[in-house]
Image (cartoon, rainbow, N blue to C red; front, side, top):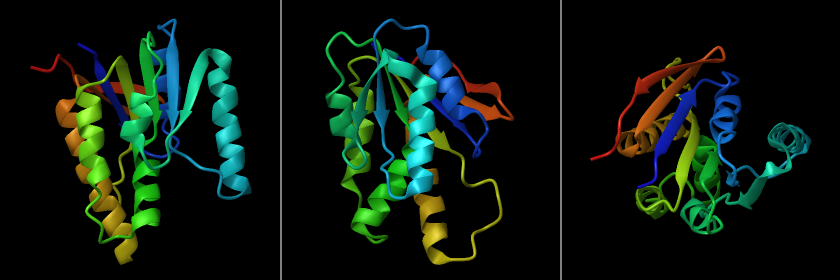
Amino acid sequence: MSRVTLVTGGARSGKSTHALALGGAYASKAFVATAEITDDEMRARIEKHQRERGASFTTIEAPLDLAGGLRRVPDGCEVAIVDCLTVWMGNLMHAHGTEAAYPEVDRLIEAISDAPCDLVLVTNEVGMGIVPDNELARVFRDRAGRLNQRVAEIADEVVFVLSGIPLKIKEGRRD
């Protein structure tokens, strides 16, 4: 049975760095990327992440079909790092609007449960700040929060990264 770790925290807290460190213990690894280049700032962020992880990862682009991205992890791969769930949720909202049912979330939960290798999933904790002043941001916060809860429920381990320090908030195997 594969092990599932959810790494969460605020923006620039060190989540991705911690996820890469967890993946470093494996010989064969994949990186499932959800971000797309939409402007120069995003291009720079993506390039920075690519430099940080180096060439030791097989990269799979999955901006909308994340479950499909997990199914494309090569046979024999020991771990896949998914970075990140909140970017993916934003992609879904942009592609389908705020009123959509997002069956992609159910497909992702199923794919995580049937993962072919260990998984490290990165997500932002977006519900600890002030209530956003606009409907779109509130819908995003709510949807991301519900997604995070569903993934945390099935994860073996949940790590909260605060100022670069990983804090285990759930540890154990799934039943």
